[in-house]
Image 1: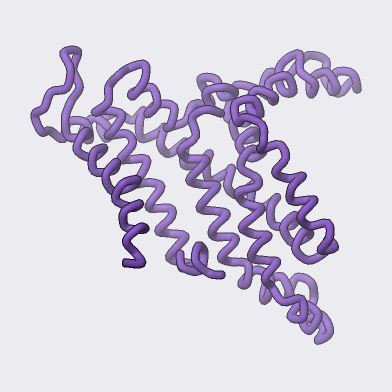
Image 2 (image 1 turned 90 degrees about the horizontal axis):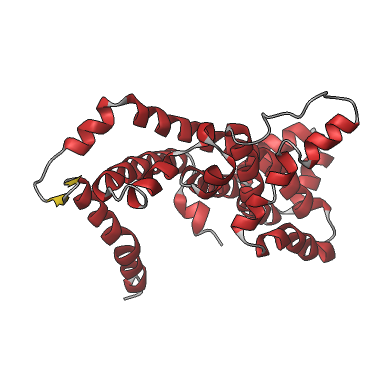
Length: 277
C-alpha cells in the first residue's frame, strides 16, 4: 500500500503516455488523416534519412556541452556556498540565485536578445572600447547563443544538488585531512568529489534531460543553425500535424535520454541520487 501512490503516478504520467506514443508511432499520418495500418515505416524513415540522425546527434552534443559547462560553474560556487559562506548568509545567497527564476522563462530568454544582438549591449561595449570595428553577428541566432542562454537558465538545477551534497560533508573530515598534510587537490579528489557524487550525478541528469528536450530557447535565440531535436518534434505535433511522425521522433529522443541516464546511474546508484537523506 505504501508504494500505491508512486505506482499510480508512474502509470498515469509515464507509462500511459509512453505507451500511447509508441502505439502512435506504429501508424502513418496522411493528408486524409491517420492510416491505422500497423507499420514500421516511420522507423525506417528515421534511419534512411541522415537529417534526423544528424539532428539528434547534434542535440545530444549541445546538451552534453551545456551540462558540462553548468557543472563546471556550479561545482566551485556550490562548494563556496556550502563550506565558506557563513551559515547566516547561505539562505540569502540561495534566494538571490533563484530570484531571476521568479520571472517567466520566455521573458528571461528574450532578455538576452538586446544583449547579444547587432545593436545590443555587448556589441556596443566592444565597439566603444575599440575592440571591434563592426557589430558581431556570431553572438545570436546560432548554437553559441542557444548554449549560452541555456547554461544561464539551467544553472540552478546543477548548483542546488551539488550544494546539498556538499553541505552534508562533515567539516571535520576536511580539517582532519588538512591537519594530516593533505593538499587541497588531494582533499578534493579523495573527500569532496566522492562524497558529492550523488549531487554531481543528480545535477548532471537533471540539466541534461532539461537541455536535450528544450525547444523554446532554440526557437527564440537559435535561428536555423541553432535548432534542436525538440523543435522538430514540436513542429510535428503543431504546424505539421503529423502526430505519428512526431511520436516516432519522441521515441528516439526518449531512448537516447534514458541511455544517458542509465550510463550515469551505472556509476552512481539512483537511490543515492534521489533517495539519500
